[in-house]
Length: 182
Picture (cartoon, rainbow, N blue to C red):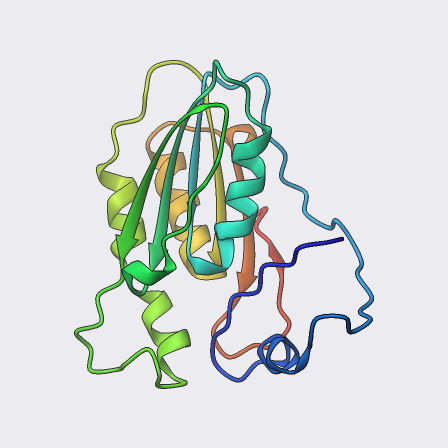
């Protein structure tokens, strides 16, 4: 048996598939495709992402050791999206609420795009005091946000070997996945 986590948003091909698939349907699965793995040399781990990142963050956190220190910042639209993240590590999770004061409701198809581009996630990570020692950051979700947080961490002293970033989606593009290496 396989368990698949799907983030439902907008009218994307994945969303249409998720609404149509039923228990017992035959599906083809490719993967795993992710390049991110826990850096075993890191003294601490920092995770940042939006709703589309929850499964990846949870998976990496599950692979950490009991002696590891980890911090996760996950941006969501409302408290109903909070999920337990099990990890043997000393994990602290901060659920970052998206500002919905722009007049769009979560039911509005534009909300899934426009609300993700808010800066709450970036601001929360910017306020986080980096622990002593060598850390590793794992950034996923909307491409521009992951790239901006990555650059912020570089400005705070992390080098390229300490930051892994993947863009899972990008405004105006269906089916995107960006390796953020620039």
